[in-house]
Structures are given as C-alpha cells and as structure tokens.
Amino acid sequence: MAQKTIEAASGKLGILTPGLGAVTTTFLAGVFAARRGLGKPFGSLTQMGTIRLGKRTENRSPRIADFVPLSGLDDLVFGAWDIFPDDAYASALKAGVLHPELVEALREDLSAVRPMAGVFDPRFVKKLDGPHIKSGGTLWDKAEALREDIRGFQQQSGADRLVMIWCGSTETFLQSSPVHETLEAFEEGLRHDHPQIAPSMVYAYAALREGIPYANGAPNLSADIPALEELAKQTGAPLAGKDFKTGQTLMKTILAPGFKARLIGLSGWFSTNILGNRDGEVLDDPESFKTKEESKLGVLDWILQPHLYPELYGDLYHKVRINYYPPRGDNKEGWDNIDIFGWLGYPMQIKIDFLCRDSILAAPIVLDLALFLDLARRAGMQGIQEWLSFYFKSPIHAREVYPEHDLFIQLMKLKNTLRHLQGEEVITHLGLEYYD
Ligand SMILES: NC(=O)c1ccc[n+]([C@@H]2O[C@H](COP(=O)([O-])OP(=O)(O)OC[C@H]3O[C@@H](n4cnc5c(N)ncnc54)[C@H](O)[C@@H]3O)[C@@H](O)[C@H]2O)c1
Figure 1 (spheres, rainbow, N blue to C red):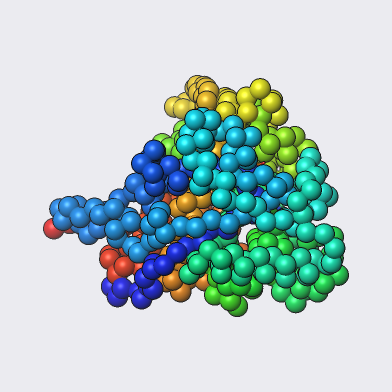
Figure 2 (figure 1 turned 60 degrees about the vertical axis):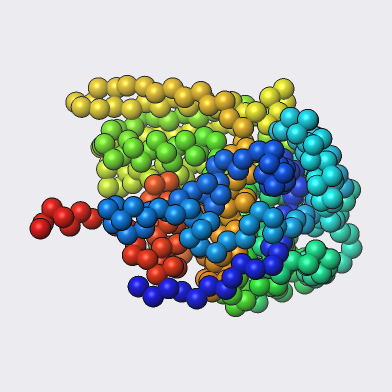
C-alpha cells in the first residue's frame, strides 16, 4: 500500500481555544506539567498509545507518536478567547480542577496565556454575561476581527500552523435552518446579523476561512452545518465535532457495545448526575441542557440499533438528567441504573456510581484532537474527519451515513486511518490461518 505524502511536523503548532475555562486550563496545565516533568499525559492516545502493525507474529507495535509525524509537546504554543479577562492561571484557580499547589508551580506558564476578547451573544448562553467582548459592528465584522486575532497570534507566537478547538460554553439548542444551508446564505447572514448564527459559528467560520482545522468540543451545532462544511472543503481545512466524549457517555459507549455483542436486552437506562462547575451552571438553563440532552440521548440508539434488534432494544426507556450542585465543583458524581435482561427474559440490574472528574477526562482529548487535526491538514485530508469520532459524543458524519458511536469500532477506524496514511495494511482481524 502506498504511503501518503505528509508534510513534516516541523516548527511550532499554535492551539487556539475559544473558551479559557475548566477544560482549557486543565489541558494547558497538563501540557506545561508534562514539559516540566511534573505529571504524565495519561488518557492521551498520541502520548501513550501504541499501534500494532502487520501480523501478530511480527511483533511490531510502535508508539503512535513514533509512527506518524506529530508535533511534540515542546512545539506547542497557545492562544485563547474568553468573555472574562482572567488569564489561564486565574481561571485554573477558579475552575478548581487541579490542586492549587500544582497551579502555583505552573504560574509563570499559565499566566502567559491571556484571553483575547470574545465574540458573544447572551441569547445563546443565558447564564453568563462577561465584560471581555468585541462590541460594535455586524457578525461579519466580528468574524473579520477574529481573523485578525488569529493572524496577530500567529505572528507574535511564531506558530507555523494553527488549529482551533471550541472549548467555550454550551450554546442553546439550535436547529439547522436555511441560513446554515449554503456558504453564500451564511455569509449574507453574517453581514445582516442573522439571529440564527451563534457565536461558535462565527469562530468556526473565521478558522475555516483561514484554512485552519476546527473541532467543536461542545454539543451545539457550531460547524456542523452544510455552509461550514462547504467552506472547509473550499479551504482544505479538516473539521470535527461535536461534544467531547467523557463521563457518563464515555461509560455508555464502553458498556453498550458489550451488551449488544452478547445480545443482552435492555429495558431501561437512567443516568443522573450532580456537578457544580461553570459548565454545570450553564447547563442548568433548560435551553443549553436541551442541546446537551440531544447529544447524550442519541448514543444508545445508534449503538444498539433497535430496528435490527426490536425484541432486545425496541422498548428501551432512556433518561438523562444533569443537576447543578455547586458544592461538588468539577468533581461530578454520576449514577446509572441499567435494567438488563438475559436468557428467557430474566431481569438483572447494574448500578454505576462514577466519581468522575470531567475536565481530567476532557484535557487529553483536546491535546489529541489538536495533534491529529494538524496531522490531517498536513496529509491533505479536508472536511469532516470521521476517523476522529472516537473523541465525540455526537460525531459529525457525512449526511448519507449514520454516525458510529461504538468506542471500539471508532478506535479501529482511527488506527486504520493512521495505518493507511503510512502505507501499512489495515487490520481487519480476519483469521485466514484457519483455512490453510
Ligand atoms: N468537561 C468535560 O468533560 C466536557 C465534556 C464534553 C463537553 N464539554 C464542553 O466543553 C465546554 C467547556 O467546558 P468547561 O468545563 O471548560 O466549561 P467552563 O464553563 O469552565 O468554560 C467555558 C468558558 O467559555 C467561555 N465562553 C463562553 N462563551 C464564549 C464565547 N462566545 N467566546 C469565548 N469564550 C466563551 C466562558 O466564559 C468560560 O470561561 C462546554 O461547552 C462543555 O459542555 C466538556
């Protein structure tokens, strides 16, 4: 199989994040800590993962970072926007994810990341209203201002290449409408401040217009609209989203494929959790929660395929609740009650009590996405990157196919994409030796 031509990952990679809250600061602190030998990047496939090549007898399993050309942690530079002016040090302390001693040890690195003024509209995040925003002008002018920020950042940081990852708050529920259908309609909408264009779409537009890969870590539509897909193809930028796969949904996509593999039936799955960070506060607004709920609910249907297994999954009652409970901060607690049934319909129950740290699970995803999206750009891959579905609760996918949610199929797809890029055989696990 021919190896694809991939430009080297030389020079610096700039990672731009709209949103400098819990996830972003935990991600930044992790990179700084790893650089200083104060912590390890656990949970990151690009830093810790290996990839098997060829037949099992060949014993070839290099580290992913040695197999495909990726930027190293020392080559990363960071830029952000937020609607609050706190630098990453102050924001990390407020987020309360990491021990204050660690944040203090990284103070110099963290305080150097100061947010640029955000593009914001309180209609889309009802629980927040920050002072650090771009005011005046149309959405088009704001997109232009973001593009200037991007170019300014690139110049001042010396970054050779850039990627953008939305780590801003979840916006209210929005359905795709005619202004999102074509690039022309969307640009017209920007010029006339169309009410259905959310701030995250303006950031996505600015990035893609500059040919910069864009990923959305939140469940709101953002770049998941035909207009921005069209733009990504036009400028050759890779695109991915939506909603980092962490917490309860990660557990669902680990467990549900197992039930289905063993044809164990499901009659109910009730998930509830308490969390007390700013994300929890934003999600306390029913309209922001609706965006999240849609993202969380879809997963089981796609994995279990009730149309193919109506007796096993046709009557599944699935409910998801998020409760804002400030005392817990970022240390969320999630409970799942799963009602399953086996042989002759005999019922059983599984209870999960997950004492989870959301941002600790999300931070390695930000790192991997940044490095893989940059790889995709250098490999000439443009538009929707389905091989990165592994990282998302609601993977963006080509309109003509259904999304793949099974974590293990997603991982196989990701690794096979890397094998394909480097001219290695894709692994199908077909055991031809039985026929010899
Ligand atoms: N932590 C997780 O495990 C996880 C998982 C999946 C998705 N997410 C999503 O990632 C996002 C970030 O999560 P978080 O825990 O860091 O939340 P957070 O509230 O701590 O941080 C979000 C930041 O975005 C800023 N912001 C909001 N609108 C903005 C705008 N238009 N421009 C610039 N900045 C803006 C807010 O001021 C805030 O500082 C949320 O949308 C969340 O739903 C998080």
